[in-house]
Amino acid sequence: QLQASGGGLVQPGGSLRLSCAASGRTFNSYVIAWFRQAPGKEREGVSWILPSDGGTYYRDSVKGRFTISSDNAKNTVYLQMSDLKPEDTAVYYCAADRDARALVRKVSGFLHRAYFASWGQGTQVTVSS
Image (cartoon, rainbow, N blue to C red; front, side, top):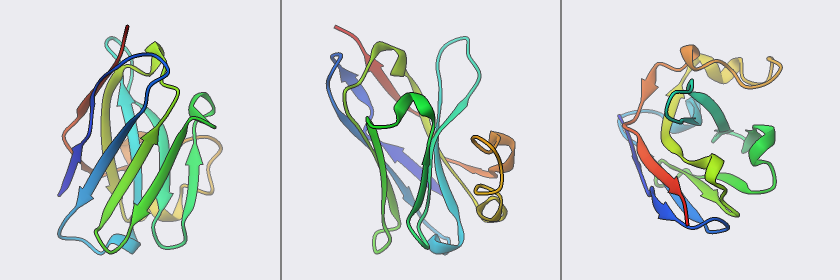
């Protein structure tokens, strides 16, 4: 089970930290990812992390602004978002998968959302003045 939290309303240039708490699983055996879905758009991958070795990946539009991290003792993944822009407005979801852990480094770009079996509920992020 995944529990996402931390969304809210923030002005452009502001920051938010999202949390994804995982229960009932061996944390290091999974890849944990953040996806987002804006109104009328497809759900897209934002960032992933491998808690086992700290490997990370970001989509180009968030590189240098977002940082993903994990606290393995707490089975929690964080997404620190800074310099937020209106185009970051979306519902953010965390997702996890055991088998996808072996695939994420082999694909070009972000592994498709269909490979992730477990999803948390979304948390709304709104960037607006």
